[in-house]
Amino acid sequence: MTIDFFKYQGTGNDFVIIDNYHVAATPLTTKQIKLICDRHFGIGADGLMLLGKKDGYDFEMIYYNSDGNQSTMCGNGGRCLVKFAYHQGIHKSMYHFIAIDGPHEAEIDSDGTVNLKMQDVSSVDYHTHHTVINTGSPHFVKFSDNVADIDVPATAADIRYSKTFAEEGINVNFVETLTEDSIFVRTYERGVEAETLSCGTGVTAAALLSAHNQSGFNTVDVKTPGGRLSVEFDKVDDDHFENIWLCGPAEFVFKGTIEI
Image (cartoon, rainbow, N blue to C red; front, side, top):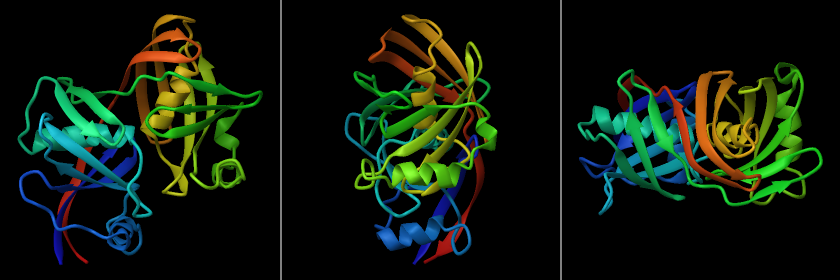
């Protein structure tokens, strides 16, 4: 079977995209998706997405992690899919699409930046040395010094596979405060089971917990190993965040066909 594909990346978080909007795509098995995402034997990607049709929306986002399993929301993936939709001729001043966690809005700035509206956050689980927060996907967030020196794969795997999180898994983020309104974030993603160069829902989680204004509008600039993003949001209180926007680049890399 031959599959036409497109490769996109958002701050180094890379995705294989298949157009299921204009022509019905052949269904893929978990094994096939895993092979496509394999960096040695396939195309290589952190995840695979389908651009689909959905009544009442501009398109539907269906997302799979590189382990081949359908997963929760992917922020950078959503931004890349918006840019792909634009390149495929779906032109909107404001996009309205549906993902696994519900409806989203997005817009593309004149410089190509894609701004994606995330779901509101209505609860945060605070602990002494870490915080658990769901921004479309579940995240463990730990603030640390010298994040660049942390052995993220080993340290995060111990957390992700701990008794508390092993069954459903969790994404693990290490966050360093750089200035009042900027942070550095490194993320280990479940389903990829490795550190990625950037994670949109992880960046969002870290930014919300880094709010410099105790209430009202906040903008947090985020450095990741793959590039820079920003998160804008309204903080209601320590457990409630609204009007959350993840903003950053989303770029076409290449297209091709693969035999699987």
